[in-house]
Image 1 (cartoon, rainbow, N blue to C red):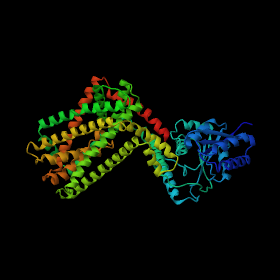
Image 2: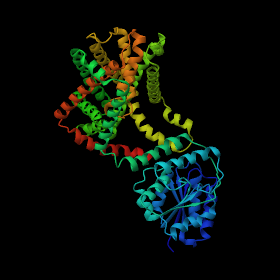
Image 3: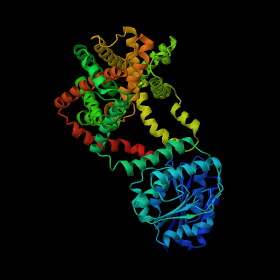
Image 4: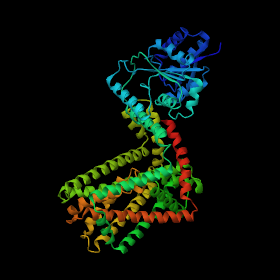
Length: 613
């Protein structure tokens, strides 16, 4: 008789229980199936104890038992999928080896697929009217997880993680083509996709007794499961609607909304009047100064690529940076970054992973530099006892200014801490990133999170480990952002030179400009609008209004501060767009085509990370 039912037991370091589990499984299956109609597969997942030896011995002694060994961790989902594909049965079953679910339910689980025609069947510990004994801490986490899956992924099931499931072979393999996770979220994703695909899904209550370690785990539950819920939600709910045209429209609406909100507390005519009174020659000079930073950006990018093993000439790479930054201004969600990866791949043969890695390194140095600039000025403010509440500004403005400071400080501290760990790890024999995750989690999911984070960390370490390269890239970043600040200083002077705006002494002006530009750029780290328009102006305006009286003894109105911020940002964006358009012509690159092509680039680059879950 051919095998009809294949039961897979995912096993990781189960030397104390695996033999008993296999014996109980065979005994239970024999109670309702012919002896030769089933098989039991031990899917041993990179064990470090005697589980492989025990499983091999059982397989040699009983032809109904099979042992699949893996030298490295595949993850629970990966181990299950590998075993299922090699199984012979048309009904595929798995349950946890701790036998927490009462085995009297196994017949209903199997026959629901084998005889009743369901495609997917799962046991449930959480169906209405059924109550199980669970440890309170883990119970809260499980309730939260299942609630989020039901809410965001529109699942009708109550328990997605119960380790007691059965599948029709053909239905499961159809579903697996789209399942990206290969660890703890694997079976939840299968259940959600089965419901979305119109398959027949059954959930039935089971008696369940908690065994083993059921504590809340930060990496598994938050980084792992939470990120996977967001991924699948994005795939089902956002991606189908998020065409380039929709994204551009949404970004434009964000900008319009931001500007509309400003008119609630600012008179647009006052802003326009202030802009009209600015000295045009100083504004033009600020544009020239800002343009000088672009060859530095190209040189910095050349140094980063050289450390990753790729050569490039300064002119081409400066043009590539111009094109990508122009894309970021036109399209939201930093689509221009993918454009640069596409350009260097198409014209210089730099692989996509290396292209994205070089961008990540560049962003880290940018973030670290503007954080250092803001932090240095902030320390100076603290040293002289600056108190924003003495600025003469309204309480609302002071409060908003403090909020902007807190947000920028949080982003900055996170960047400094992350880079500090990366640099220290690069100069140490120990894997500090792995150690940091293992401090908050002892779950095997750490391996998968660390691998995903490690790809980024390794690329940054490549530059961080080379002192000369680190100093060159860091020095170039400092020079680039210093020119960015000098541009703002010249714009500031353009408004005060005509006499319509109170003059600010040079030293306070320099300190204020360093701080406003740094915090303004930190405020637009999240790509909520094209080019950060609105976010930059808001943070810049608040800081100028709050800090100018305390630093320089003069009070600038919010309308004037916003006008300075608008012109400063506009100068930088105009230079960027002119350079971007010129570069697309010189390099014969279509920005629209590059953005469309980069959509496939993003998928190709992201796929390995998604597989690690």
